[in-house]
Length: 268
Image 1 (cartoon, rainbow, N blue to C red):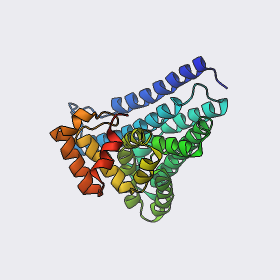
Image 2 (cartoon, rainbow, N blue to C red):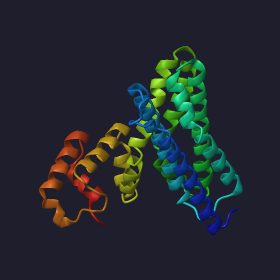
Image 3 (tube, one colour):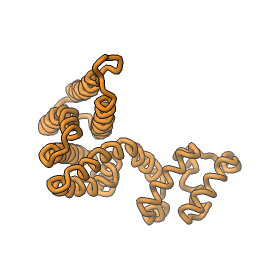
Image 4 (cartoon, rainbow, N blue to C red):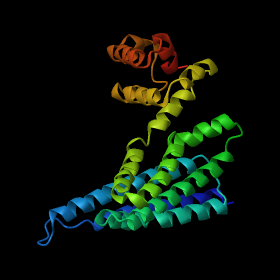
């Protein structure tokens, strides 16, 4: 096991590598003021940079959240993280090769790399979090909080896209470019949901768990729209126009009782 101080240094080292990867990607963008630049090349380079940035940013967030759960990590986890970071450093070049020439070989190479990184991330998170939680329900909730409730679906989608990439590489490429962006844009949804759930009583949690994934996403979206945070509502706030509008929207959209919604958010 790595000591707490050694783990902190290792986390800093991983952060530095990912920061360098993003910096190199930015430096490789073509200079717009150059005499020989072509607009198409610039747009392709910016697209590749954006997709790669989203991918690296999502992985960094998941690693940081996982690392924050523990004070020590094993040497096995350290080696897996280093292997994952090494493969991540190849993503920008693989993305550029795929966008520049979307053949079945470049698309499948990119897809296999994505699948390997995702598999390593799942192993690291699973192994690390399993040691933190004795309660299975808490472990699963924390695992999905970090990786996202769509993690299994995304994994299966990547396998399907590998097969699709052999026959229809350009269609598979389109999906491959969207997956990192989607993960990056929804990176914090699970955390907000988890903060809300941890405050609920057993009976309240049973009602919440009956909501579909789409309904839960809608709730988080409404929370952000009205700037409502878990445990941020007091009895005095119940009469404000913003809170009443929020409760009405949630009640209409999710078909929930207004009193139940208040119980979820009131300070306890």
